[in-house]
Image (cartoon, rainbow, N blue to C red; front, side):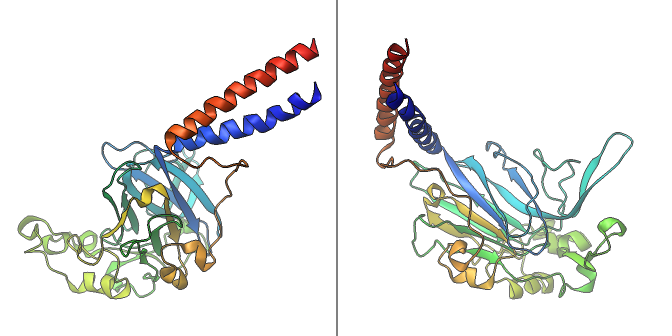
Length: 324
């Protein structure tokens, strides 16, 4: 009686792990790491038609990582909110952030995007069964609030295009005076003087800075002194709407290995070949493994699950007979 009963937990563990791997064929993982010296509140927004991620907002303490599940063919953006707090209000407590607030009044952004200025990581994943490339970038088109990096994780395709996209410099201190956003009165005594750097489009609402109207094409919208400021500090990031040539990154089927999104990346992570963890960043949570593995095709994994479930049923029947 004892031996079959002792085997039941192990069999259940293996079945559960294999089922997760089968389901994972339709999902990708974004590992979000906070390497800043302060808490950030990541926000996530799916593009139109893309499924919602497993979470749209949460708190992330310094040195911590969190895994967010998205669809294998997901497209959307990730950003960091800073200097956030919950304030009492007549209609209930309201959550708000000094920079990149999504306006939901809660920690979860629930389908709302970042209020500029905000550094954005933008991703379009091709999907696990698609031969097309993934596309990703770091964008300063909506301004800057936190240094950021996005890169394929270890184990993803490692072609020449699978490189990190980043703006690792902190632009707030060097931000031109006319673009600066100062800490508000409610930001707290320890808040820095400049908490974000606006884009020229947001600051001046002029067509030549917004690439709109008569400037609404790559031929008519050229870099400006303000976009050149962003580009000089962060050469691989989008500095204005048509900055595609040096700012869009691709990687073949990297979504299968997932992506790292790192706030305040270390400079060495830009040389890590697309794996910020190799540069000493906090490791992501370990995954549960079952001895024997589950390598092979999706069909093989499903067959293995079925076999294990059948074995589990046999052991359960044996244990039941001996018990009675």
